[in-house]
Image 1 (tube, rainbow, N blue to C red):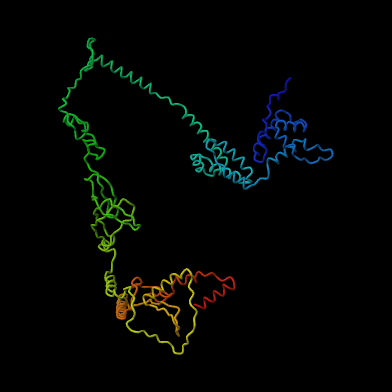
Image 2: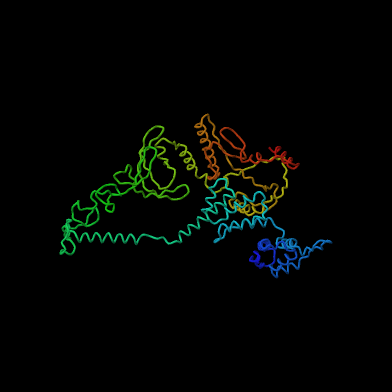
Length: 553
């Protein structure tokens, strides 16, 4: 009698090439071989027989690798490891499963994404195999869940997963299975040709038409039955209208008898303007832009001319905003607005633009409404002073009319000072400036020995003019008086000033590291910023630097 295990087929030969990259193929072959031994009841055979089955089924390449293995010499009384299936499989495991690189395994896991024609089940299976070598520990399920969500190609599935609260790996896999199943069902439905009832509808329509035709043939125009000898179509009861009486209608657009009861648009509502007795195609109402609202809020709308509150008139003006972009207004209109403080109303003209900009009022309008006050006397006074002494601010440099004498202490002795070193990146600029000053006869070149030689030029030409008074008006008046006297002196002595540096009527100004204000003298914040932000000293050099700075101050 034949055994029940004779029909069990042996696993396929191990066809993968030998190497460390075929670990997955080896694991699959090993699992199939062990299942074959168990199913065919050959697991109880001697170890040598099982090793022989492995090498026979595995093929020539597996046999050659087996011959290259070096097994330890067995102890006395112990079987040879080369003939023990467990030891032989362990040798192959070591060969096909080299030492794992955790970083490389995690890189492969993170780079694994679903392929174009790959199902979700296959993709999840690949991820489960790759995650085994990543050594995530108790974070394995979370990492696997994240990679399934990030790596899948279905955006709808990803959106559903994002909407689930407290998403776990189990919920993720369940949703993937459900989504894949529903997708397959939809593909089946789309691939099945949809049957229509067009033929049935045509048959019913045809039968209904034939029935109506038969009834017409068998009845007179007033409903009475015809005689059998009356053949042909019944004559129409409506009298025919001559073509000469058909005229184009300005209400419906068709040609008919010139009577309103004959017009199909009579009594119908126009969908464009809402009025009756005409179609929208013949509607003569004109849609225009208009502005509506109250004293505070206004809206730009479109409607019939008869419904407009404030008509939006055309405008050819082009506006330029602070970003230097140009905007063409949609139109202009006059609106009545109210000042919320004095409750007065003003009729003003506005330019309307089709952009979300903050509404603006012009300077003239703001002054008219009492929102701002401009002191034109101060502006005009400053401009008049600069225009009156325009020759003082001329850029032409001239020499003084008289000889200028500098008094030197008779006890002072000349000292030889080495020439000043100029940084290389500033050398060209310094030379250019010196040549320019020499051409303007501000300085002169020394080409012979002298007792005194000035090598360093200190250009300290800033002038401050202050005004003093009990009130602001008195201080401004005193300031202008001193300014005029100073400009007259400069005009008389030929002194030139730089107009670009002129700053007039300021309540505070920075000068030589200080800040001069109406409240007194204080340090310039820009100069003391480095001192305030100075870090506490941590060594001897830092402490010396700190004490030197204190002594300098």
